[in-house]
Amino acid sequence: MSPELSFTGLSVLLARVTPHSVAIVHALLRDGARVTVAAELDDLPTSLRDLAERALVTLDAAADPTTHDVVLRADVSTAPSAADLPDRPVDGDTPVVGSVTLLGGGLGDPGLLTVAGIEAIRRADVIVHDRLAPLSALRHARDDVMVIDVGKIPRGDFTPQERINDVIVEHALAGRDVLRFKGGDNFVFGRGGEEAEACTARGIPVTVIPGISSSIAAPALAGIPVTHRALVQGFTVVSGHVAPGDPRSTLDWGAIARSNTTIVILMGVATLRAVAATLVSEGLSSQTPAAVVADAGLPSMRTARAPLAEIANTAERERLGAPAVVVIGDVAALDVLR
Image (cartoon, rainbow, N blue to C red; front, side, top):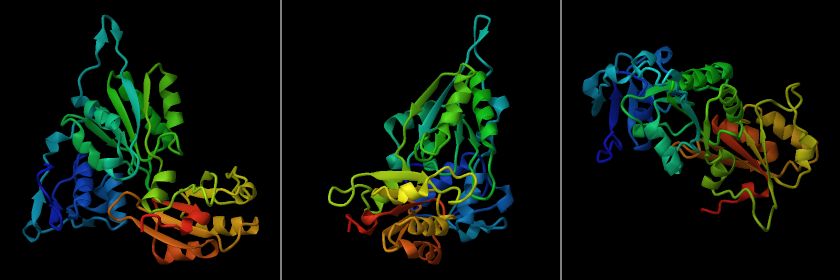
């Protein structure tokens, strides 16, 4: 989209979906447009399906173009396949290996993406992205880039990590500049370490461009400093992907409850009730301030606050879901931006 155009308040119909549609829709939403996609849910790539399931876009396969302010009709020729990419380069008789860049995109706001990250998007031959990366930044990509959506919807569609590793390696071994584009930071619950190991095991050079982790950025955007000289001297970041007591959990929740630090939980909305109950049973006061920050960095961002014993009910009542960050500790009662 041209930076001179504004779609704020307009009803926009995306009449055809291509791999580049993800960037277009994210840019439209950030600009304040009301977006309708002319497709069925099952026909969408994962990242667009996620937006539809979170009610951020409307689906209407039979949408009438005359009822919308703007109609965008993407040219399917702008979506290259692997066969459209250049042949593998060679140096004499030796095939040239490409490279892989692991880019942490921070939160959903493309303004929080680093300059190095934008340069990596511009030079990539192949972009392999998740649903939580700031996908409107893909407008900086070349027209001939191959975009591969491997987003994972919580308790829904996902691409197995092993297949993601294979996709990255296959394209890099074909001599291409591959960008692995994720939300947050690749090495903070992002499985970037596994992807880097898969590449280096095949002799593929890897560059890492760190991103702003949601563990600090989401609370900050909500006016919650994870540390505060008068209140707390540290913070603990854990994954809430599995609940306390689950055989897969390796966390010592008792030690966390007694740490005297701010507790930041990623991927913990679904298990929040069990986590809160466990922390209280381990000695943390039920009245400890807590907050849930959902959709941080996006226009749909919302924050709910309540005592620890009530935070799960409050988040449920406010219909806060993933992506969200949970903050537990005295700082959760603050809003320094107010």
